Image (cartoon, rainbow, N blue to C red; front, top):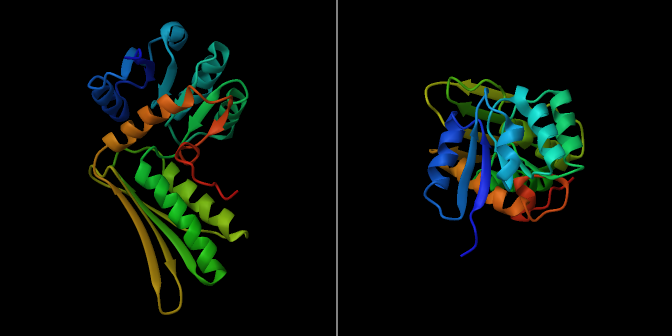
Length: 232
């Protein structure tokens, strides 16, 4: 039996961190080498690890990316809401290490991206496009990173500047719902993904962690891991 993949988990006390721990502790392919919170040193914690998974805060992205690049630790980044400086830090790190940076680690959501791309390619400019997303009341960023990426996918496919309205709902304990509507004359196409458990994101992140350790330096998405064309 191969040795388990040793993971340093940043943001271990958060919702997603707890979901990753719950799955990893019951899967012999993984071992949580360290749980990193705000008061902990990622640099010290990463000395005996194969990969870093980050589900903390966008404000930590720059530091996490720089440390992983310096230590040559592959990074799976699931935090969203980064500003341009934080995104630049991710791109800089990806020149040194492999980074999977995804708006959403659910496999079904990434299939939604692919379906939306194909729908936009087929329907073209004659259809209006709007996106509706819903999350729990404590989610900090709006629109969600998933909704933003969904809009980017469609805009890229249409090949023209389009203002795609995104409607955000923050209520209750909704894990994550995303719907894209293509509305034409006399017909309407709706594509929807609903997440009922955070385990789908945790499972995808662990799958990405196993995949990324064998990749050369670069910036990857779940779509790359799943073998989907980006259409960019």
